[in-house]
Image 1 (cartoon, helix red, strand yellow):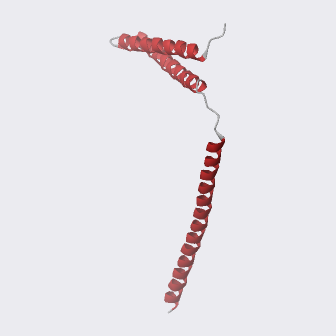
Image 2: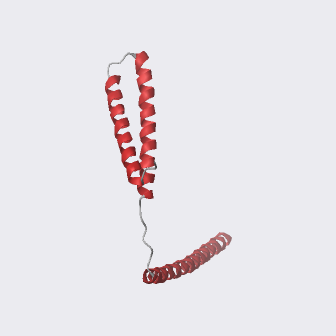
Image 3: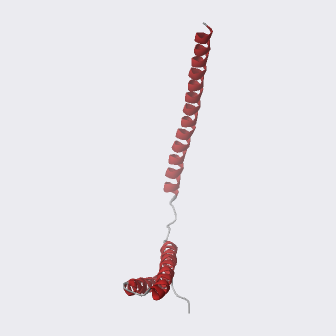
Length: 122
């Protein structure tokens, strides 16, 4: 029997709650524990944290897997293409503007260098 994504998500949530509860109990046990037992408890706490991270990642993947994407209408596709063309044009214009500004800055830097050398020579 295979489980649905919703059932997997629910089971993973129960597992996550259980591990969080275990973590809480381990933290309580840590208070006043002798050093020999404290090292063991700290190792278990670390294992719980790792498992919580793993289960949280699985949860995120299950949520993403349950996302349903509707097909895009032809009208939306045309509008998206129009907007992409506007962005492409703006990017090209920005590249031209940046190249012009860089050339202007290089020209000003060169003129300043020429001026500095002329002042040094006089």
